[in-house]
Image 1 (cartoon, one colour):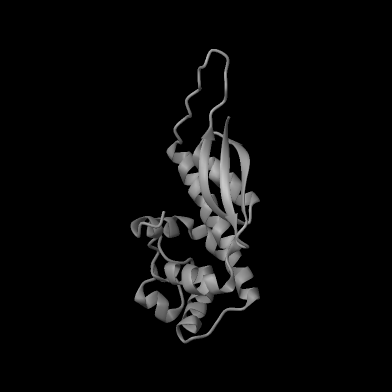
Image 2 (cartoon, rainbow, N blue to C red):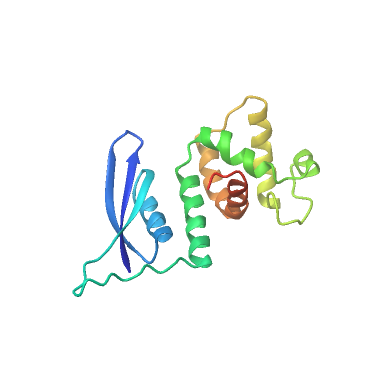
Length: 166
């Protein structure tokens, strides 16, 4: 286990830092995001002082570690999202994966591993159409989306990575 210093900035503008024990930087970032209400601004590896002057090398994160960290990061962002964020970010991004027919019928027609499941297609497509007409979603609908959308973390990750946001 390594120790990391995670710096962050809260929504009210205050800055802070905390020490986190983790196997690698990605895991440290994920652990810190769960505990703070703010944006991570930096992660620093704190080298332990060992007799003889040797510093243990940090283990490189495995693909599994990185995938788990990304899943938790997307989940944390969705859980913190405000109704307006669902309208501007999360719903439009997942709707991009629906085919035109699926958007029209508000149903998952093609089993293509993209877009929404049948259970979510009607609700999310209906909300997307309302937003497209200038409407808004309620706090209760946002709470429902916090349950529905985290399962699509891989699609969100692929989209963010291709747009250089990650």
